[in-house]
Image (cartoon, rainbow, N blue to C red; front, side):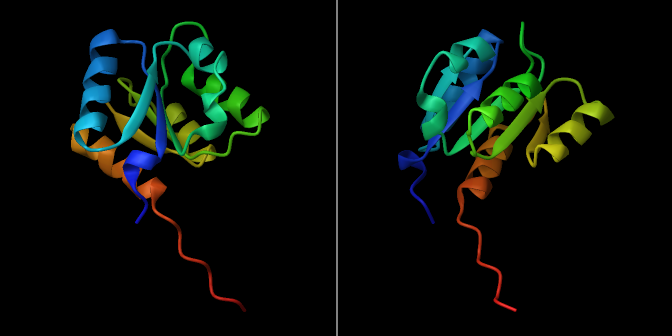
Length: 130
């Protein structure tokens, strides 16, 4: 199992109190997290290419979490993504599934998010050769 402290999780959450709460949950769980309040703030950094996992709020001011994911994908970022939202909409779930990402609806237990991140950070077993 990888060491979560050595794996970088990038969080984009515009609600300041939620942003702080999630950073604290990650820190207390031993997960290395850098948080941003806007999609544009993350795009202005070079850390995206170092991310082991992305946690993106769907409803962000300006660029949405899905639009951010599209931009990061165009830039060659291959980290798995977990989308978080306060609005459980079928279209959002479908879009998250198309991106190959997880999907959590707020409010959720902090442990659910940490567990979801740890699952995507675990190495996947190799498929047996035919």
